Length: 375
Image (tube, rainbow, N blue to C red):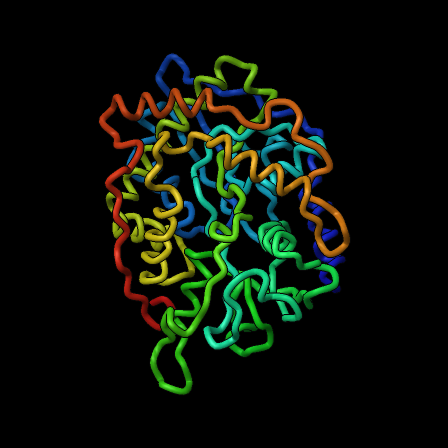
C-alpha cells in the first residue's frame, strides 16, 4: 500500500468515534468499595506508561478510592476513540492525534499533559551528512505514518522542503531495520524506544554494539517543530458531572504520585514494567524509563500542567503544516474544551500537600548501559 493511502486511512481511523453513550460515573458505595476505572493506554506495555503501572502497583489509585484497570494499546487501537466511544474512562494519547479526532466529533479534553516535551527523533548515519531537517532534501525518509509523522513534516516544511516533492517517503516498520540495512537514509525513532534499538544492535564490522557516535540525530525540539505528546484525556461531556470532576482530580493525583515514584525509583519501575509482560528487555526498559523521565522532569509548573505556549505551537503546526497530499492535521482551531488545567492544578496541589515533589527540579538523568538486544 502506498504511504499516502496508509496515512489517509489512518486519518479516517483517528477521526472515527462512536455514538455510544458514555457509561455513568461509578461512585463508592456505603461499604467503601473502590470505583472501577478503565485507562486506555496508547501502546503495548512499556516504560512509556510506567507511572500508571506504578500507581496501580503501589496502591496510589486505591488510596484515592479508585480501582484502575489498564487497557493495553496496540497497532489497531486508537485510545482517544476508545474513550469517545465510552469504552474507557480516560485515555493516554498524543495531542495532535487526539485533536484530529476532536475535530471529527470526539468529545474529549486534555486534562493532564504528562509529557512536557517531545521524544521524537529522525536518525541518520553519522557519515550521511544529515544533521538538520534541511539535509533531508533528496533523501529516502522513513516514517511510521498513523499520525506519528506530523513533527517530521513540520520540520521539513519549516526548512523549505516540500514533503510531497523533495523527499522520497518510505513507510517504516516500528523498528530500525530499514536504517540498519541502509534501505533508507533517515528513520523515525522515539528517544526512549527505537533509538535505543540502534544502540542495542551489533556493528558487523567491529563485532561490538553501535554507539551514539555512529549516528546523527535530528531533534524536533531543536528544529522548532516539536508537538505535545502523551496526555491524559477525559470525556468532555462527563466533565459537567461533579462526581466525574472529583474522580478526575483523584485519578490525576494518584497518577502524579506514580510518575514521581518512577522518577525516584527508575529500576523498581523498570521491574514493574517487565513483570507486566513487556516483550522488551531489562536494559531497554531502564533506558526507556530514564528517557521518559527526561520528557516529564523537571516540570516547573507542576507535572501535567499544560503549558500554553507549547499547546499553541502544537495547534499552529496542526493547522499550517501540510503532508505530502496537501492536507493539514486540523482545518481550524480546536473548539470547545480542548484542554483545561482545572483538574491537574487541583491534583498537583493535593499531591504536594501529601509530600510529593511535583516539579522534580532536582532531577538528574542516569547513565544507562544497554545490552545487545536490550536484554
